[in-house]
Length: 100
Image (cartoon, rainbow, N blue to C red; front, side, top):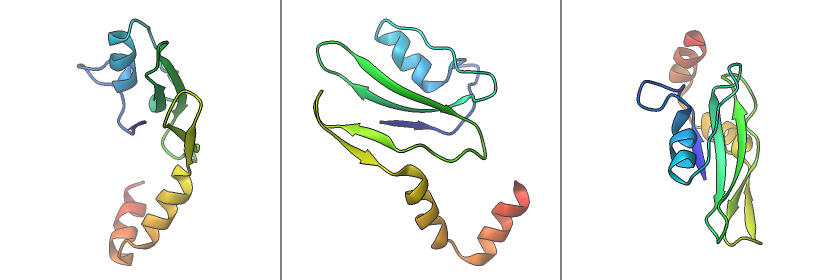
């Protein structure tokens, strides 16, 4: 699974998923309004990716963590992020909230 919260740059103009997918023989162009990427990969006989583009402020979609081509564990990314954020000291929460 890949969580790429950074916008594409000069070394990865289509994001990290674009670089990985190109190495595997595919192509990917992130939507201009959702340049960040969540991706899950099945590296079986036929490479498969499950991609969710997102933008800053979007809720994070639950993603599959693939164990085999047929089995996966769902990863609740938004819920995990929110639970972790509750542990951030209030001072730093205010700093982060002021920056957004």
